[in-house]
Amino acid sequence: MTSQPSRRDLIAVAATLAAGPAFAADGLGGLRIPASAADSELRGLSPTGGKTYWASGSKGWLVRGHDERQEPMRIIGAEALDFRGLHAFDDDHVLAMSAGPGEASQLWRTKDGGKTWKRLAANHDPAGFWDSIAFVDGKRGYILGDPTQGRFTVLYTDDGGETWARLPDRGVPLAVAGEGAFAASNGCVALGRRAEVAFCTGGGGRARVYVSRGGGGIFVPTDTPIAGDAPSRGAFAVAYGKHGELWVCGGDYKNPKAEGVTLARLDPGRVTFEPVAAPPGYLSSISVSGSTVMATGLAGTIVSRDGGPFQRVSAAPFNTVRLTGPRKAVLAGPRGSIGLWSV
Image (cartoon, rainbow, N blue to C red):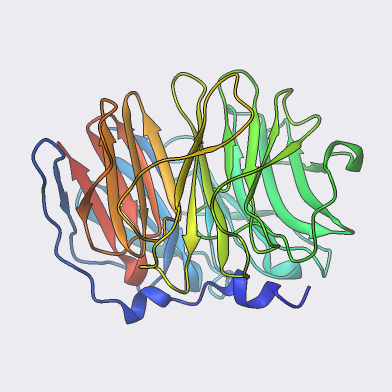
């Protein structure tokens, strides 16, 4: 599809943005941004408990972190890959997924904390492009890829990532022309507590969320109020809340400070996403823990606590966020930046 390269590339727009200072609003906590340890556009992020986490990104870089301490590393033979997806089963056992056209989409594993790595899989479809990876538990997981032969690629594993199979086409509706997922934050796939699987899209004239309520069997697409009328616009990330509500965020990565709906929610029992009031600006990642919802993007980071309104806690650009509890989060972004939020 001719619109794909500009949408997929997500060229480091953040490099042209001045990172605003981190600041704290009453009751919303503050954001620490330690010195970067890797020359990389970080998009993959996976906490492993306590203050430890893994991050991954462009130029083959991965970062193993503990609070402000960061240990950067590169996989031998994978230095040119862009690791936009990441899943850490624990501090030593990690899957890193690269995103790119054809065989630039690959999956690597370490079981010894990054000392050695093994390539598990590669995309052999020249038209394919992997966007995101997510796991239900230690065995069951999904990889989402852009449409090939008219339908989104949804791969499934039940052996911890050793082998993968594509879900049958009959369960995935046809994509519209130009529609795709965004490999911006490893956030375009969400897993619910009752076997729900959701993924979000854009760039095809609409921003949609596909939901399967039966463990990836049959996906049903639903429009969102986020604009998706250009290759750079759409729904970028989804996340389930504690009551089964489904959050979606997005916008326009080429115009990160633009006005417009960038946040919406689908409540249990409803069939329509409703826009949620939020400070303006493109959002590429969203995370939920208890009654805390945090979203981030190149326009900064916003948070809602205990059902309150969303407020901005930092203007610094980030690509991805993961709450490690209702009062703590890790963020990753441009130029190897790591953010540590706490209340």
